[in-house]
Amino acid sequence: MHSIKKYLALSLLILSLPNFAQEKGNENEVSVERPLNEPFRPQFHFTPAANWMNDPNGMVYYEGEYHLFYQHHPQSNIWGPMHWGHAISTDMIHWEHQPIALFPDKHGTIFSGSTVADIHNTSGLGTAETPPLVAIFTYHDVKAEKEGKLDFQTQGIAYSTDRGRTWSKYEGNPVLKNPGIRDFRDPKVSWYGDKEGNGKWIMTLAVKDKISFYSSPNLIDWQHESDFNPAWGAYGGVWECPDLFELPTSDGGSKWVLLVSINPGAPNGGSGTQYFVGDFNGKDFNADGDQVKWLDYGADNYAGVTWSNISQSDGRRLFIGWMSNWTYANTVPTEAWRSATTLPRSLELITHEGDNILASRPVEELGKLRISSETMEGNDLSLPDELAEIELGISEENFELVLSNSHGNRIIIGKNEKGIYLDRGQSGLTEFNEEFKAPHKAPDLGLQYKKLKLFIDRSSIEVFFNDGELVMSEVVFPNSPYTRLETQGFENAVTVHRLKSIW
Ligand code: FRU
Image (tube, rainbow, N blue to C red; front, top):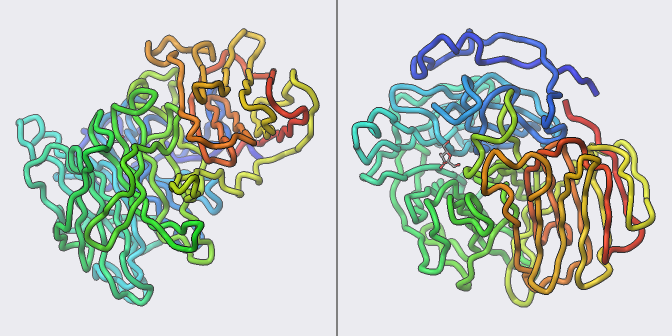
């Protein structure tokens, strides 16, 4: 493990250039040394080396590498003209920062989207021998927006034939024009068909307060198929960053899951991700039931989507979210960078009382972070390290744990007759936003609570009940590491894994 990380500082020379002039900026990148070790810098979550990040984008697994692109403002630690930052990993845990993949151009800045491996070269943008990776993203035309036009968001594509190292924009962009709707964005594309290449591409697009499905034979020509916006969905804010995928069910069948991020309108305020379970036939999505379900009941898991092109032998549906919330994302107390991704999770459907619940399991690769594991006994423990994975057995119907430090900062997590709660009101720095202190709640979902797992990084805590049947992801900014764990309603033996930094 090294504390100094070499990375590409993309901002230094770009600073002097106008925002939109930079179509190919790689020649301007400067290599510098800097430790990713500032106060609050997450040590086992992905963060941009410098400056602003929001949504994860373009996640594709290709030739042994997990690609993570992300909404990035390379010149500032607050949101601005969006680029696609890029990082590569072989295990979803350790990341190598890469040069910026997509720069704004004459069609606009580069909003969220997805990447597919076009294995059969349906787009013609590669060759049969060297099929392309194709990124499908939203162009946001700031000038058109300022002029009061409505059609300023369109979909464009870019391709790479060198394993994602360099990207070229398609000359015929945009490939999907806007019919006159302000919010028309975040294409998530997947292959609906067989491995031999019989089938079509499906684009799942967020269109104001509905999801629109489009299809294409070649990623270039798109045709509208249907819309989805059931009366009972959550509509507290605009719909964003959808994802659509099929998962096995416990009865040996399968169901389709549609993720829809929404901001504001989440159960604990601001940004959150609802999901629908149902059926998709290549044209229409139909949801089961009439209850809104949430992927994560914490305040900080937004705009998350899943990796495409994961091998069949792996078979997991692997997810990462943006660990922040638009309510305070621009004002959290970090300077050098802003925000992190969640830990990677495997999404699985579990059947509970006839209903399908989407569980988020921490991926097994996280085991690589462990330095040492010990079983501690008691209900008032001194934690050995600031970076920890803690496993507890729940022994009573109602339970509570308090994580605290010598500064009197504390996080309280528990369950009572009303459901699950998490209180970060005194967790450390909270004054940067007045809503940050608010207590958070989750319904108990009728589950039997047996286990609780915590991942504690320098500025976040992720709580997995029953291996992810209910999850709460939260950012926190303690004055010093949480070193004490008091529990009530838990088994006496607590497993504490010390974790190492990925940087
Ligand atoms: C979600 C979002 C997307 C958009 C992007 C812009 O957080 O608003 O809808 O594409 O961020 O950065």
